[in-house]
Amino acid sequence: MTIELDSLNVGKVNVVKSKTLSFTGKALNVAIGVSRLGAKAQATGFMYNENGAMFEQALDKEGVPFTFVWNGGRVRENYKCIDKRSMLTEINDVGGQVESGKLVELMQMIRGYSSQSDVTVISGGLPRGVDASFYREIFRAVDGHSLRICDTEGAKMFAALEAGIDLVKPNLEELEETLGREIHDKDEMLSACHELLDRGARMVLLSLGKDGAILTDGSHNYYCKSINVAVNSTVGAGDAMVAAAAVMMEKGGSLPDILRAGVAAGTASVTTFGTISFTKSKYEEIFSSLGVSEF
Image (tube, rainbow, N blue to C red; front, side, top):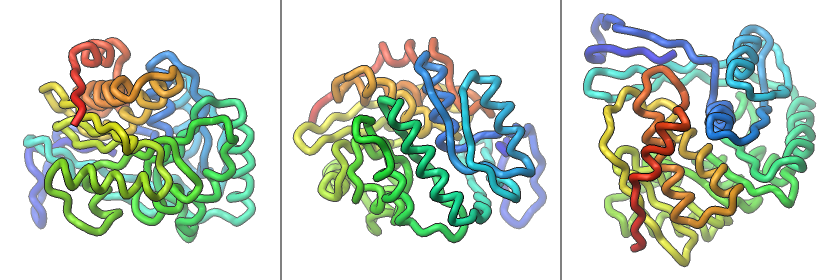
């Protein structure tokens, strides 16, 4: 649920200006972004009986095929509150529980779909009670020929890196939380990214929000500054970045082009309110205007 307010006043009554209900999630956002860019996507993951049909309808509307591992209960509900200063406050629900047999079923599904995919993206949280090590196991289930992209944080990210990852995409806040320290400048950002490379990433795409992003493979470090746009919502911007980076990687794009693609899609995404994606035309317009510098 994305809620727009004039201002968010803690401890007081707040009046909603507008609200939008989106049946989506991090990996589903990526699948939609990939589809918007004209590439083929296949979505999978855990789904829940009570409101899962709404997610199927949303993916059908976008033309994204899907096959889910179904569970009892309800998909968690997250609240994104945006005030007139474009400040985002998030209230995230906790996921439902799944049976151990469902974990095996999902790994088998990932193994099968990744064997048919040039890129496999795994992102988001885990169901309640599932250990962070499950991220390592599901990436180990990915077919060896498929590029692997991870978008999560903390112990889940560390577990995924043990399996070897082609691209990991934290934002600055997630990177600080994962490494347990504050990061103040580009030198510290680069040092932090290199820690993830040392742990098993081939590339790190660090999102800096309105300031753009950094991409490094340890040998080359690139920075791309975003362009100024009217920010209507930052919800889903990181997922748009992952989608565009995945498509560019599948095309065999250079590091600068992977970075430009990610920043272009993330920037295009924030120009819309309540829409968890972007248009291809807006993406292409922004992509053509971006520059990349090596440092």
